[in-house]
Amino acid sequence: IQLTQSPSSLSASVGDRVTITCRASQGISFSLAWYQQKPGKAPKLLIYAASTLQSGVPSRFSGSGSGTDFTLTISTLQPEDFATYYCQQLSSYPSFTFGQGTKLEIK
Amino acid sequence: QVLLVESGGGVVQPGRSLRLSCAASGFTFSNSGMHWVRQAPGKGLEWVAGISSSDGSKKDYGDSVKGRITISRDNSKNTVYLQMNSLRTDDTAVYYCAKWSGTYPLYYFDSWGQGTLVTVSS
Image (cartoon, rainbow over all chains, first blue to last red; front, top):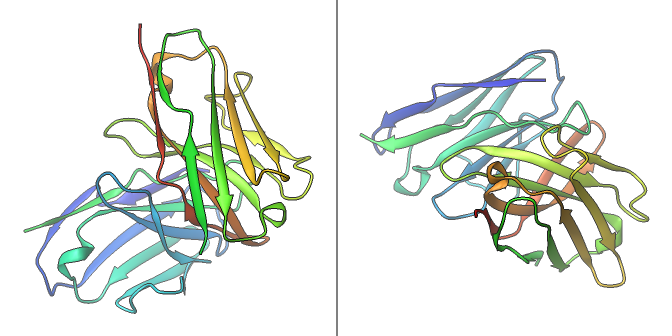
């Protein structure tokens, strides 16, 4: 299963609302997770099961979608949100593929 | 809290072998499946290998490493390993271990180590 994220990069300002999309090459139900990665750091789980917020993650992050089309939304961008975001499908065990990433930069 | 600490990375020549370790603490290790994910310099995340919980009887590998890499676990040491043989220059990456959580089909990787860098170069 291939995952395609769009856009590959995005410039936005603090306070903006941002949406990143992830499209799967075939239906994966709700088996999708989103991660945030900052330079030199390990990925951090934000959302799993397409829309469940991981404990401790700010509520400005939300996820939606099912089947083949998914979105990650940041409602009000904060300075600490500038990072690279990856989706991951966990439907076709064992190949838990990742999207290519979306780099969110400061405008 | 959950802590995963990778070790064993370094510089190695093409064709040689290396074994990575990931020491776990803060959770019942034997109850969790574990995975290795790698990231080549400036690139995205690539799933490498996974091992089931308990006896680790189920193991699986990414296409790019199949036949060259073996994942294993030692529950007495709370450690998961990645044995890498016949290393190639395109195996150069930071290797992360990750804890596998959730129930089928709603899985996720909820904790990650800090990563260990493997550089394959002559």
